[in-house]
Image (cartoon, rainbow, N blue to C red; front, side, top):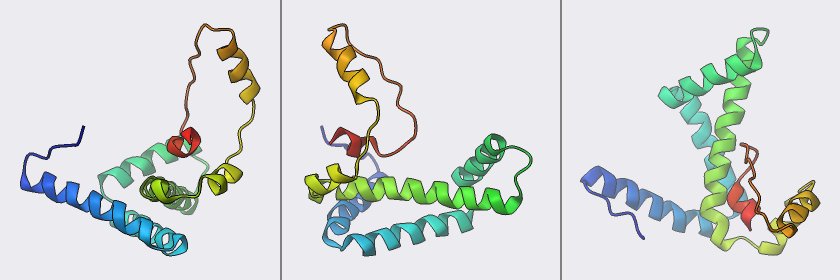
Length: 137
């Protein structure tokens, strides 16, 4: 089912995603990655609500011994990671499956396979540890 935007702002957002979806797949990957990194860095410099919340979350998790400079680096890396997620999501349909699979490394898959083989189903907790669309591939 396709998202049906209600207002002008929704249509603009929908059009923006559709344009990015097409454009990012046509650009060389290093060009796209550079652009997404710069967009993440700009977002950090602007420091909107989402970035401010990320900063508070990371400061809490990292602990009181971290300097402001260290927290700044964590925020930048976090936003770049989020931007990379979107880059990979937009590029997924045009990615070379064999190249992607050569870069994906999983440990303990035999445990999941054994649980599935027992026929009772499996519940898996998925942490924020990468792009699960890539993992699904």
